[in-house]
Length: 479
Image (tube, rainbow, N blue to C red; front, top):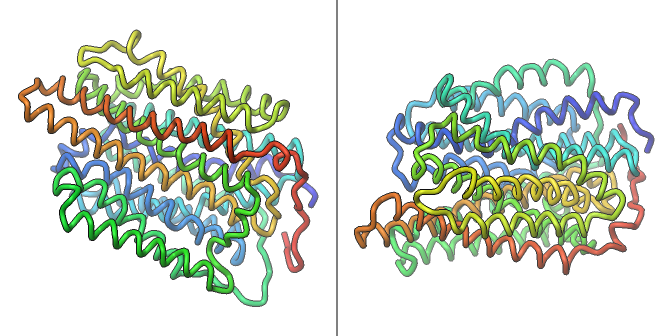
């Protein structure tokens, strides 16, 4: 496959849309207190502004990747951008808890269509080798830094214009991408005699994961041993088991398990899920701690993350160069160790903490860790993947990160709530009780971080990363 002569312009257009979807994972964090107050959210329901987006995003990514490969990557990409842009408009106009959460879910569906189509376009625009690795390095850097930049942007927009603008800012950007795409991005798709999309697989995995996150989120209020929690967990398990059965029996499954025969691809997705859990929940807990305990404004909270965002952007180029020279595994492991170390640091935060001494070292570790983890994970997740399965592979790694993020936020929120209510019930001062809850939440993230390091060391294989992937198109492939 020869590289497209306009490949860098193509990358710029599709990466803009991808960055917009990543930004919206974290841009709402700083605005959560304002949103909760304006729309009268219950404390336990605020996390659904984040998790509704992440679950829909993760649950439909594989279906989005399949649709992109079969219907045409450019047209599917444009449909996703249009849906995401419209949902962003509705989010900003929301006047109730239910409307906002529903619109966030639709926004996540748009992101699920954009992300795999965009990465598939990149895969088919760049020839295998150093240039594609550079493009994927940029992609990974955007994915890693987007979360940190989102928190900063959220603070600026919330304080300066109102929380509605964290959503409305997507509208002109989406319109610009829609205008440029037909001019710059060529159509490409996989031709096949029959087009099967496996909607049952998509519905079963999304419903199963939604119930899982909901059960974890509600357990602190209703009790872990109650019939409601147990039944929700059982129903979730049955739906996920049904997904596995469906994928093993349909002719063209949404997630062919053969892709996991490459151990590195399986390992990269496992690492991606744990990485998503740490990153998503880290920003969720930190922004609440900085505002609710330290009393920072939304704007000041956003600016505290300049250290993370700036460090991530600078480190991304270094991570890409080191990954090309030394391979993905050692750089990924360094990044994951740094992230885990940052979670240990945050688990010591005091109720009367200061930015310089108690937060800044962790912010810097997270910035470097994000870049050093995301860039090689993006490369490893596509190792040995044929062009005809580019949509599947790109959808799979994004699914892992988004679902991991949703579960991570749910677990961290649950641990925080349980500890906070216990301390508050013992008449501890509210700032002390909140801090105790956040510290326990970060300890939960330490566990995710340690597991990610173990997964990287045991499942990522240097020999598989070094192998030349089969990139020749299958019969009927066109671009």
